[in-house]
Length: 437
Ligand SMILES: O=C(O)C(=O)C[C@]1(C(=O)O)C=C[C@@H](O)C=C1
Image (cartoon, rainbow, N blue to C red):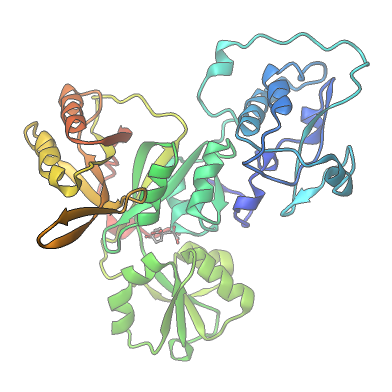
């Protein structure tokens, strides 16, 4: 797996820039490519969308291998990326200049000289143009949260060997990177065998329209890392991702370290922070690969509270996969009901009667309607919390028993969405080979 630049994508830098489009490759007969530096979801330049959608700007001199770039450009434009105002453009690099957002050049398609030679006729779409397969050369681009050396990067590599791993500074950015065609897939953690659910990703799964197309379970082997020459006795602080801190809670206590524990965005980011700031009183909980990347030494190895510590990640894509029955599949759903938890028993029985095993059940606050009031004139007002329920079950949506179970669930619920039906990770169990180095 190839890693991109260590600096992760942030929300502000999600522009056409990140597509890697170049000035030359997109410079067609009627358009030049130039800079934008603003992403504004409230404002769509519809003329740009329509010109890009016709596709005929790729006439003479257009490199046919960049069809995917055209597709990506259309998608990005349609995803409400707006051009900068003319005057701002001038100040940020001029009509044909390339300026930068967060260090990246940014691009724009601008009509030029309408009176010049007639426009080439539009090229008809072919079957290949409609393929949902990733089209960025042979390498799939996979977004993950964190910086290189994070476990999520290793999970991306396990899910998609030889992928181009794209670091993102937040989970939400990874979702958006796929939605905006900057990445082809995202690989995000949803639960850990010791630390439990990564709730943020459950909430984001509901808020975004991506589909779960697979899962990977990654054995997570934590190390205590510090600058060369630093000894355990010098430490006053241990920093890491909150999940990693919780997965090592008891071991850290047993080690007798006199340290405070502080949460940061990701494990490898903690290692990078120590190295960049030359912190000699601080250690990070992170992978052996992070030690290597950021020049830290391993003070203690395998400090997770359980040697079989595993994190489950889901693979997300813009399109669902077609469910099959020739191998074990899992299906993930989310549902809610106006009458709250009273429906739960009926939903569970729809699976139990069909012998379908559940592998996970999670509840999250129903953020649109968090409280339900039940008035009783004699006693007062009961305030029930409302939930969204997430269930994973062991069956493929191609199986009639799963379809029937969901038809029944739909009768009991006011909201039901299938998040994905995908192959189960059946990798043989071997936690001792879990080191990511
Ligand atoms: O910080 C990282 O390295 C991550 O990839 C994130 C994360 C998580 O969110 O749970 C992933 C796996 C481990 O369980 C610890 C942290």
